[in-house]
Length: 170
Image (cartoon, rainbow, N blue to C red; front, side, top):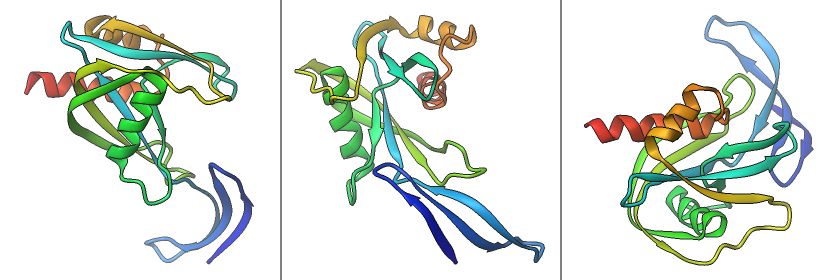
């Protein structure tokens, strides 16, 4: 059973009555989220598109992959394609799903679909009013070094880079 506490445009917070596998009953705070998609966009020079984006909740400027929230009934690939165009001003000829990851399963059901996009062409960006975004291109190996040094802290970006690196060695 679920008792909704707050329902906004991004999340739905509620108290849920659950029975654990060992039979105990609990009341848990759970955030329901529609999920999202993030894109590792690699160009022909093996550079990755990284966004430097201001995130108030994250404490300021963060390095991120182009990404966004799934709209109702929108396939994850469609979200990835839309967000790559809107945030980075790119379209891709080839797409490959890298992974689906849970962001914070201790209290939230958000799943992020990670994609690799290649065969890129430049188009216009369409940043939303609440977005403060700079588009940057970094050599893929430099992005991995940034991750290792702790300069990239965003989980979806770290995982996207990891899965892209693994897929390059296959």
